Image 1 (cartoon, rainbow, N blue to C red):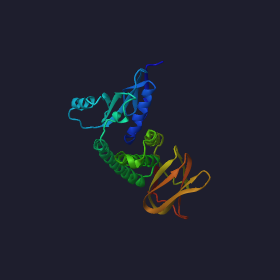
Image 2: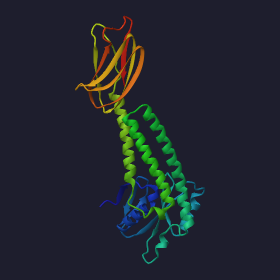
Image 3: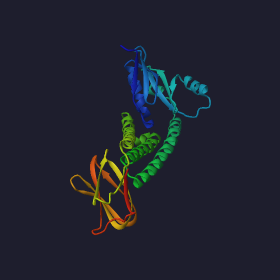
Image 4: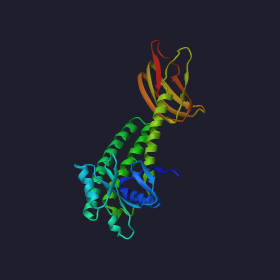
Length: 302
């Protein structure tokens, strides 16, 4: 049997009591915490000891030695701390002692002070995340893309979760009992974010902008374009003609997906959602007209 065990999990800050409960349960089974972490914890096997664990949040400690000594005077052994301000402590378990003996803070004010330190950080982070959401949403409206939509969604959900968590940690009695770790919520958010970024990279490398010009000897003019991924595509059109020109985008079944047109010095663009496949772009001039000898037509899709 291996003497070391690594456990990968994620606990939102407002579920720190659930993390403590899980550490206690593992200790009862013989697995004692060697190093606690935000995403990974390491345990060693020792079934001769039982501990009760506690977590404290404090990211601004002026004198770490004095801070740890203060808890040591109350019987708490320091295990380790994390980069974001959480500190792990433990105490040998004696079932004959009352439960209050294993509370790191025995007065309500100390508990509120600890919760307040994290909730202030949580409200700040949540507000920043919602501001990022608004900025991403504005860009997604101006230039729609699957990547932009997924990133905006992930930022929105993460921001709301952090704000709700900041409220929960300050109001534990109203929020209810600690629940099973909600790390899966963060995993879902980060998965959406990673999927959006991956989609954007694939779109960037698999898509290619193409430029087309007409052959005056063969009207109407039709080109075939392809969409490598399901996404929003923007067609940019430039034309300099004496006649009115009509541009139509159709799928292979002949269904019209987009149209645009005009005459003279035409500058236009059209954004459309396309599934992977081939599409036809047809350019046609008004009946009885044709482009001037010096005219041109060009379009680009990105």
